[in-house]
Image (cartoon, rainbow, N blue to C red; front, top):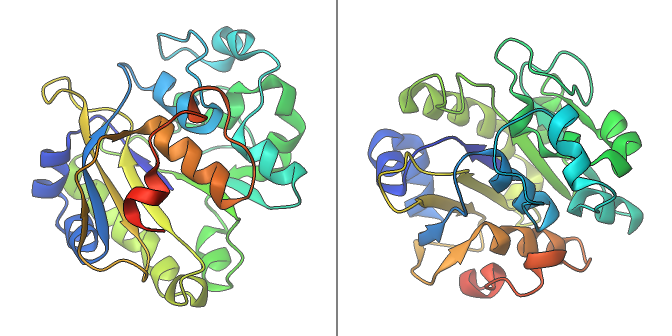
Length: 251
């Protein structure tokens, strides 16, 4: 899973040609809604099934107490004997809890779950080994690739984000796991730019799909439910009753 920043569906399709080609080749949802503004609550919802009354983009020192002992899909996957990992670009150390250069902690949701800090310290890492893990078919059962502020189109352009995404996904899409249908890649945006009703692009990349366009209403809780189902665990909180992404795409 890759989450871009602050752009609408139409902006991403128009200004990210590589992603647009992949979305048209495999699959995309055209009525996908982010949940709120600003960014951080959307990330928490995707991983934890709830926004935990978070309404801003503050660091874990301020907002992790609101999350408290809550569970998340990564922790559930690990307890179920599956693997989970976050790869965060420009992060200075595993599970870094403060901003650093182009690393924005608010885009790294695992850091906001204090009850799961041990797993975060082990499995929330930099992008140093991402390409090697992809080429070696060692990507986790559920995971998140976090671009830095330049490459997620927050501070940089959509063109720069598209170029980074093309390079980052190249070893993934060439891997045996992807080509045999064992790996699904989801690319979405946390929220729009406040001018498109919070409708964002969500592309679903897998050889099982060809030119699939889903026009059902889905949202970030649907993505939480999808990840939970893929690793065989129950979704959390608002993910329990979320609209069915897996069924909508026929996966």
